[in-house]
Amino acid sequence: MPHAYQLAVPDYLVLAALALVVGWIAWRCKHGAATVEGYFLADRSAPGWRVGLSFIGASISSLGFLAFPASAYRSNWGGIIPFLMMPAVAILADLIFLPLYRRLGIASGYEYLERRFGTLARLYGSSMFLLLQVGRMGLILVLLAIPLKLLTGMSPPQAILLCGLVMTAFVVFGGLGAVLWIDTLQTLTLAVGSLLCIGLICGSLPDGLGTVFSVGLRDAKFSLPPWHQPGASLADDFNQLTLGVLVLYGLASQMLYYSADQNIIQRYLATRTNGQARIGLWVGSLGVVPLFCFFFFIGTSLYAYYQASPDPAVAGLRPDEVFPHFILTRVPAGIKGIIIGALVAAAISSLTSSLSAIAMVFQIDVYRRFLAPQRSEAHYLRVAKGATIVGGCLVTLNAVALASAPVDTLLDLVFLVYAIFAGGLAGLFLLGMLSTRAERRGVNLGIAASLATSIYLTCSHFQWLLPASLRWSPHPFLISAASNSVLFVVGYLASLVLGRRTETAAAQGLTIWPDGRPALAGRAPVESETLP
Image 1 (cartoon, rainbow, N blue to C red):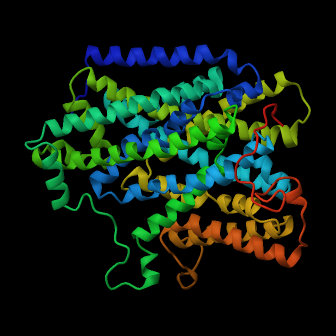
Image 2 (cartoon, rainbow, N blue to C red):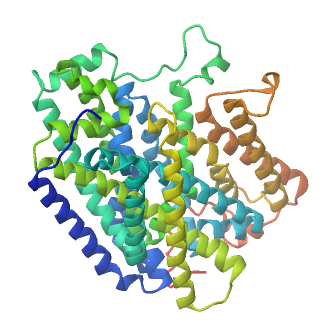
Image 3 (cartoon, rainbow, N blue to C red):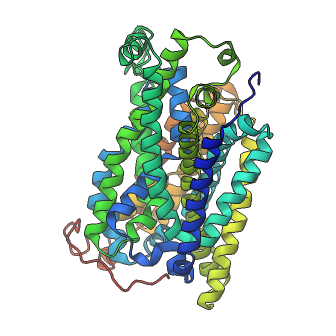
């Protein structure tokens, strides 16, 4: 890099204060993490507003603070479309997912799959979740390493190893209670940091916001991909990044997030009442949208800024490095520390949330269920912390491998990871919750068909194994939507053929029809739940 980046004393003071706050939170919450339920569910006593702010923090991470501006800087606002689907899918979460999970009194969403469809479904769901989270967290670590690399001269692997160590130690000490607090801190810091960035960029332009809008409109930086490519067939529209592809991808990925992501299921269960859980759901689902818009606006503002004030160094940077370069070269001392602190807090917050969920899924759905049932509480707590350490190591190693991934921006890679490894999970949960006719053998066939679909479309996209005549390659972002649809349809139809209609699932309260009519709300929460 041609620039020598440095921080001033006020920046170091801000970062030191943030580090002290984070360390104090972990230390303060360690007593609440002395049991398995305290470690994974914060003793089910968090207030709804804090869960909502934590929801925002877990949803954004450094992917939002760096990858979103990079996407808007490189192209347009198309990348925001999948995330605008969150409030729409949150309606289903409010009506179906949240009340059902709380009524059942479970701690893991994949325990639900075993109750509904048997052991294979639980293993499949938990395995796909673990693969997905390891991939996602690796990408977040890669993004966090960028400013550290620019600031310190460390190599990307060294920066990733440092971040991985901090993340793992925080979760081991504080558990979910600390994670919820750091998510809250991170959300507030991100809001302040993003507004400061927009103000600094616009304040440096001749006409302020007017320059951003005039340059952005001139170069189509506020545009969205078209619904239909001129002259293309309907099939061709699904092979390219059209608006329809982004909407379908967004619906599939957010359905996965709200129904099957243990990060969110933990938050459904972390409050005492259904009412508080709903407050958390809606504070998070509505509050996250303005922040996403801020991040994309930062990218467009950066584009306008460097059009008005060209910097030769920017030409040699990846899109993901432009925003860190601006922070480190154009932002005043002190404010620079706040913005870098927001970036670090964003990454650590999301990473700790995911690492806690990974450890919980392994401990409950694998170790306790299959390897060592009926052990003591102290034994399972030790295993939970051990799983946190092992998970942190795996995520860090994966991030080192992803650091050299050949993509235009890491947001593209994020979308691809979600598309491939989602594995039909949302379709599986929806089938279990919505249909009383779905049964084990039919669903197992649906899982097989979904996996075959994902493998076929992935091999077609990367031109692996299959001859050209046998490939069909829609846009890779549609792999998730296709695999979810295949699992739901094949699982349902196969159940009709292979099984008998049974009221067993309804009788056990495993669908939204426990007594022949939808049970969408108004159920009392289970106050005395314990981990299975």
